Length: 413
Image (cartoon, rainbow, N blue to C red; front, side, top):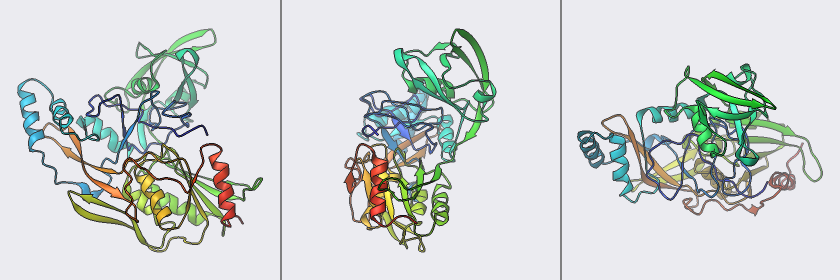
């Protein structure tokens, strides 16, 4: 795998407090259909619900929206509501006014969303998105090409196949555009809801045609489990790939561990994991720990702790695979298993997002998110900026190296 990737959401809301060309990754919890390749966000195959898609050179950001029940309330919303009231009097939106206020606050992770945008994020935390089931990539000459089609989705039913070229979306030319913009058009700029239509201009060999598709609510599982046979120096193993911590992800990880062959090692693949619900990451940690700390965090100076449930499998060999796209909740899980001596972490240093954002709904229904605290691993390590440094730093052929390490720990059956 060529260097660490930086992932951003395929859905880009219109108002951002962050500047310097960065996009904000919402912990949408929707699985990326294809892996991003290269360093600093060269995109391969994002789809409409994907957490992968970045322009070259952009440093992306991540936020655990709504990730902690304890993180609700306590924000001084007075200045934001005052700004929203003044904005309405001037004919502006409250969200735009809030963005101006937060832009002056120095809070580099803050952001403002319309009520409709935030509803889309809540949907995504269930591992769902509204779209037509396409995976796209930017090919040579800036051509946008369909790379994959979701089985049973609107695009497949319409006869679209990988290799078809996408010329226009609702009449807008897409050749030469960044993939993020193309995916936003596919999803709808509002974003559009289920039942809305999108008109695609397509090309296959010498044929050109248009097709109107109806968007649907599509659900993508956040956990994929595969048993791999032994090869070379690597023993058989159960590979658990977790793309994001959406609702139910933690229990799916626990089920996968329980179903693994007795004594067989587990490779927990957190590469490209955009994070998500911290509570789900804590549940996932419970699959491997017999209780004890997973992370600590502060909210307005008050300390809190996240603890694993007792009864996890503490004997099974475990290796955690990470890269530069491993963020926030995924970083905390990797850091907890590393600190507790439960796993060997292999791969590239992680992203470094350890701040807590709290959503606050404003009078006009828009939502502002402000940084209110920071996470730390069980040993007290800060995650922000520094990320998690693997026990074995590997940038190429990382999965094979991780399986070799797992074999050395006694993994196999």
